Image (cartoon, rainbow, N blue to C red; front, side, top):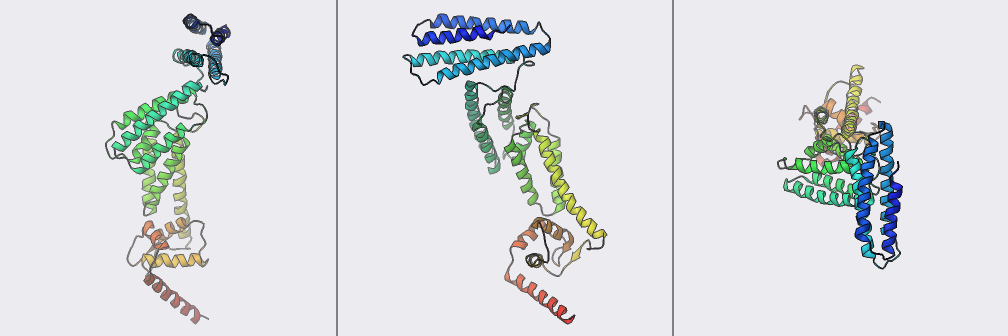
Length: 382
């Protein structure tokens, strides 16, 4: 039995009576409330009498019917046609929408297995959710500042909350359920953290909450990439990236459902990014090992240049087209791994990079002297 048809007619009739100026508010509201309770009892009763698959279809049919009725009622509020008692009429419609929303919530609470969580929430529920997001966002940002969070952490929170507030579509029931648990979990976790609040702590927290928002994923990748760039050599990069992989892999999820069910879980996505970075580092090592085994280059060359002079000498060869590269970073990593100078047995990638793009006159003069020697040797061979 489909219970919504007569209920819809009853609600629309009450609204029409109100428009006509007839005052039966208390009697009408009592009748609608009584009918809503009867309908809910009838739905719950009939759901127990049929097979699970039929019960699911039956519940979802009524869920869709109630959501459609909510949309109809909300549309009446937005009509441009003026009425004599507009404020009272809108108040009555708002009460009806609240009643219908509560009926949907009752279905969700009593029969969650049959409920369609992929269904979008009503406009009223969406508006309330946005207000709750704004309220929770303010509380979380205030707490983060009290914990002396760094600028990166504050910016992450601000952008995440802005993306949620600016969401153009309607959240689904599953997303709404997730977001309430999400904000409660963050506030609870922040109460246990000690200052200063570190960006890595927030990454692990949001991963544990299964927050697979695209912006958060890109923020994690950017953070890891910056940390790798700060490493002085490939060995440090290996240690860092494997440590980060261990941390992400050991995270225990406290929310089982993700924010977005059609996107990969956030831990899986980050681990795939990490694996691609590890593969890239391994490819650098593999190329160097192959060249060494083939006798094309020695495993290490000692030069009489300083680090700055060596960097300038390599830079000149790149600009002259002697060395062709696709990535300056790859070249820097190769040089630091296979060259040593009179002043340093181990050249850090960071120091070489700084020297590669910045040098002084005395370094230029020293390199010119060596190039002149090379030219004289070449001239003698003619």
